[in-house]
Amino acid sequence: MRRLALGLTQTKVAKAINVTFQQIQKYEKGINGVSSIRLLQLSNYLKIPINYFFDNYAEYLNNANKTADKTGEAYMSVNYDFLIKIYAELTQEQKNKFLKLSASETNLVNLNTG
Image (cartoon, rainbow, N blue to C red; front, side, top):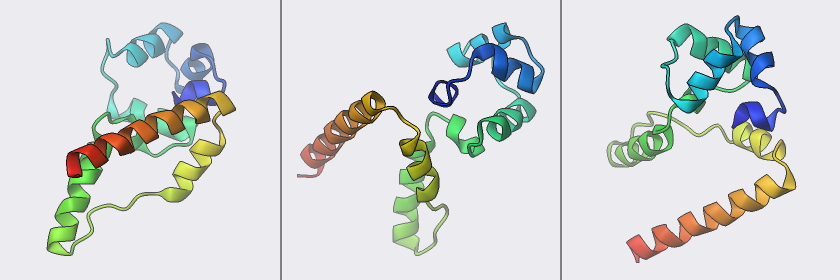
């Protein structure tokens, strides 16, 4: 998603981290795993924190925050500046989709919590 948001081709990203565009395709489709050094290279090139690549990061963050609320310890904090920057880079169509999805998520949370 980040590559597309920046308007980068798979070939351009591949050259930047010294792999083939086919390897980028395999990374994006989840066919091949990504080594930690490649994640670091991608993170640096795409100018995003490395945790961007982890599917369950939001769920993990939510659980960590719940634990922090109970214990008084903060394990992680949300980087709102990063989120604002990413949101600002979206096209209007992408923003509309995001808003629609986030509204659906909010409605689901409200249904679950009453």
